[in-house]
Image 1 (cartoon, one colour):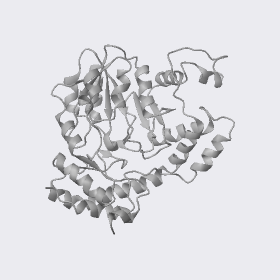
Image 2 (tube, rainbow, N blue to C red):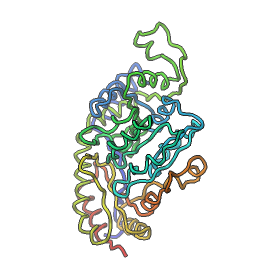
Image 3 (tube, rainbow, N blue to C red):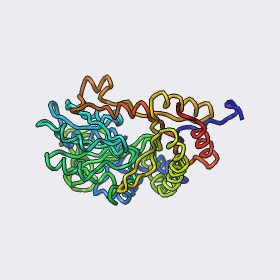
Image 4 (cartoon, rainbow, N blue to C red):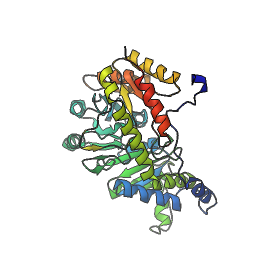
Length: 384
């Protein structure tokens, strides 16, 4: 088969749940299509079941969930927040909007998570919080990070955009920090096109988050009959998720087991099927520490050098397989250099990883024939 005859296997294809269209139609024709509707309540309840979180507030994205965190923690000009350099821009940019300085820490070479051994050296008298990203849904070293945060009186925030369904020592990701953000972007395991959620550990945080999310008003308390009228009581913005999006999310969450089963099958097929090839070509595969259970969000390869990465992506494209790289380190980005700084020692691992990483197609709709094509295409490549 020539390349022109092939159907390209995309890097990602969004999963559509069986009940998704019916639920969205019901939401559009229901009595309440903005926030606080029955689908929103059901989605929050399902997320509490999956994560074990005490409080779940739906938002328009993980970015807005993180932005809520900045307001809840009252972070402002002159404050510093330690964040990983190897992560999505929102993990840092939300703090910059409040006038805070992101201090970028390097990642570990195995899990690509923030290096827990470098965090303490980045702490100063101005540090207010530590943000961790569970890269690919593999947990950061939360025992040590939690102790560092407690020792220095820092708020711990989890960017858990990759990690719904993941655990660390049998504890769900998103429940270690005072606050955590989830993403339901179209590329995530569970998606509604655009969406997110904030997980809050305490009643007071959740109560204030509810107010800030609803334009700074206590309207939710009014709807519950707790006050006789709603008023503007705090800073706020509008991060409410509309019912049609929540309806999609409910259908996805109800299919969570189905989604995860197939994603795990694909991830394992890659990991087993590429073991010998990776060893022979000096390629690193994902590392999953024994205390971590991951949700099969990403499968990546780390080539020995940048030229190998470029060549592999081109090789796969010629065979109708779309493979992509991932983040550019934030500390070396134009905005990162302008608004933040690297932690002591810089971020050499993040720079190296960013030049060498390739992500393979991974989604529930990837059938066995396509999976075989990806494996054959990768293993036919030799790193030179």
